[in-house]
Length: 72
Image 1 (cartoon, one colour):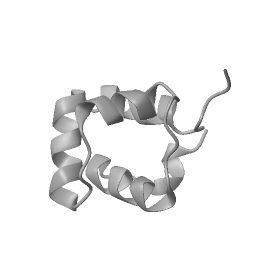
Image 2: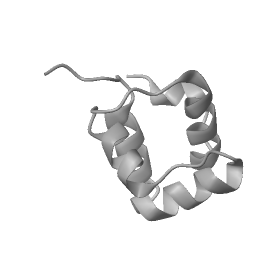
Image 3: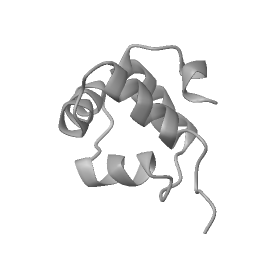
Image 4: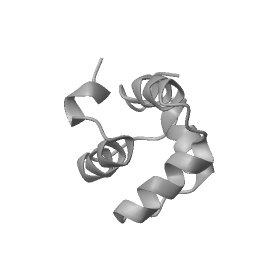
């Protein structure tokens, strides 16, 4: 099976670099207005779930990074 996204591994690496758990990142996303569960984040990080552009905006804001950092 091919990956459903190209950003999942980057999201995981940046999250871990910032010493955030999946639960903490989903809480930050929820505060930004992106209703996401830990399970959904896990699917994104593992490449199982596709990610739409607006979701990447929320994730980059929650991680306090420029959106370009999500792309390999």
